[in-house]
Length: 298
Image (cartoon, one colour):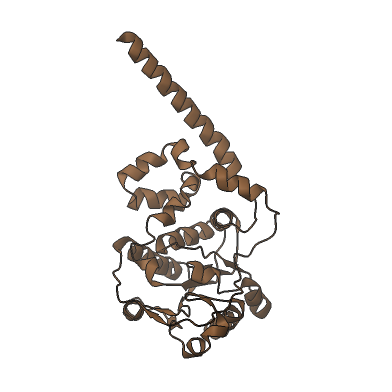
């Protein structure tokens, strides 16, 4: 029996030692993540590196719509697109809080869609960046406040936290380094796509709280918050009605282009797929934002 206990303790000691070494080596590698335009590397830039006068937040609809270079060329304000595919208000809040540790944007453009305030992306928004737990204070604080005790326990293990890191890190280091502004262009065209109407919509309490924290943080720091709904052929009328009420309650100006007739009537030309504009449509939408921003900043 004594021998069994000793063997168990030896195994535990080896596991703990491996975990400590993995954390030390993994964190060192993570903090030198190259800038190559992948989802994970862009998340690293948004959470630790980038500074901008105009911060763009949202999901893939933000990532493929708002072009920072156009914003800078037209306004003289630096801009960064921190939109990430399939991430909700919780991730947007973490990014904004991380930015404020480095700089204070003049404008935050928050592109909202239905999935950002429902449960759909609640967990993967954190799972995709869990390797930064303990390195990024806003992420760590979010997990402490909203994460389950099981998640918090697992994230104290470096082996769990870093379990998916080697694959994407190897891919990232094989790609050429280049300066990224976060925008990813789409160049497809729809041949013939019908408008899809979604009737199911139910908000998630945590995502709504994070949305409210974004609003409160902007007010506290005197940051202009511009909330957009980008054009989409996936119509969520319930979400748009909810957003209108939510924006009025929180005294936020809502720019709703979700069912904009110009884009709807020209969808074969300006959409890459049913939920994302192509580069041509994105240029038009970016110019719309630029005009709105210039009016607001006056």
